[in-house]
Amino acid sequence: MQMPVHIVAAGGFVENTKGEILLVKTRRDGHWVFPGGHVEVGENLIDGVIREVKEESGIDVKVSHLVGISSNTATYEGHSGVKTVPTKVMFDFVCEPVGGKLTISDETSDSRWVSKGEVLDMVSAPALRTRYQAYLAYNGSVHYMDNITKPQFELKLERNI
Image (cartoon, rainbow, N blue to C red):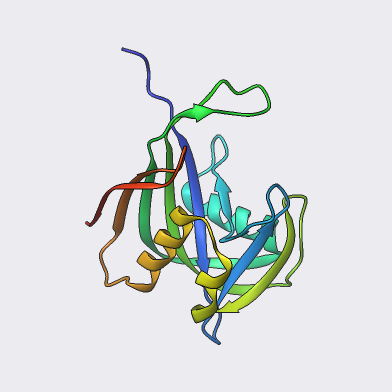
């Protein structure tokens, strides 16, 4: 048996006191997304999401609670010399802003606060839209989703745990 390899990522649904959600625009493809990314070697999930939100948006956050876990079980050809991208496991946290100032980074070309009702008009990726809808529907249970994103989005399993 081959030792399993997974990419671990953490994302933040950052909501301010006005009920607005923090979005960042990626430089790679120009899409609006929630801040987050790969957890680094030796880094825990909480520190990872705090770092990613700060790096991508300039906003300092405090993590409140876990709202969702998603497994992207598709494997596909990578880029930059990566032969195969393995399963990615993403942990979505609700975060509260505690400081900082909106900015951009090497990875983002824009960052802004968006009303909850306008988020789905800006976020186009089906997996991100599904994760945001789980955030909106949060009832105290963690939302679990198994999906593939390539060649096209397919939701394979969805449940609350």
